[in-house]
Image 1 (cartoon, rainbow, N blue to C red):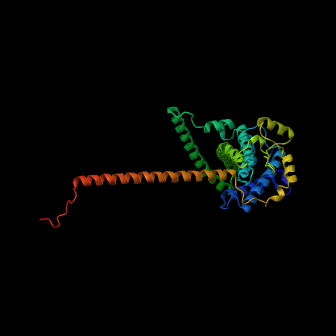
Image 2 (image 1 turned 120 degrees about the vertical axis):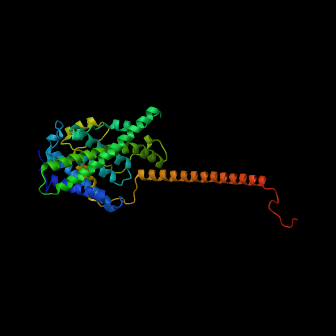
Image 3 (image 1 turned 180 degrees about the vertical axis):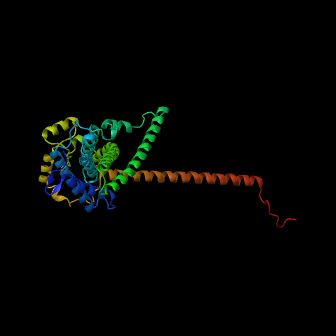
Length: 350
């Protein structure tokens, strides 16, 4: 079924293209990410892509028993909805960084799972727990440990080169698509490669989220006086919630089975809740001065590293000065041994 349903005067495809254009603009802009203008664009783009997700769900474009080869070319781009929403969520400035991470994690996992179900690009996509395991360093460094570290390094280099090749090919295909006479095969190859690129970046984002979560949780405990996490008062703000492609409450329940610890809502439930909360009416109201807990953690860590480096430099300088003074003292002693007092003084001597 093709995406021909209209939302007012705008088609689903047009809505998605509009959101994608804003997303690319956000990625390319030099504006500070905490500025009100930037944050307003992020929220606007999220709203547009959530509306597109709602329409895609209404159309029932995706089925679990299909492969990517069976999906219409014009519908392939809708695979990108969750990964775009996940990346946009991470761009939001919010005091509740942990909630942002949880929402982005849901979107990224949903994207990877759909790509895995549809066998996109023939990629071997790991599960969430495998992502964590493959990042863990060897517990006992030794010959096998160093061998594994070397293997991981080679794997990262290979992925980096593959990503660069993908980027070059995508630029070439995007330019070809701008030609009105381009055929469907070019568009199909473009969106398949774009999905493949986002699979690579999503895997890295999930690894980063896994590493960032403990830091954020620890900083929350510190900011609230180091008390036990179980006794902390609940967050009083309005948490961001993920919106995934489901058609009804039945599919929502099925989705929940795959992600037992993740809250799930149908598209309609989330849109209604957002409207009640006045979320859509506050696109311009952003916290320009707010900073994520991760930024604070990084700044603190950098300050500590800088202080440690300065202390090391001072200690090293002191050692070098002592060595230099010792060398000069020894040279002077040697000189005195070779030159007795009055050596070279021939004045008033017969």
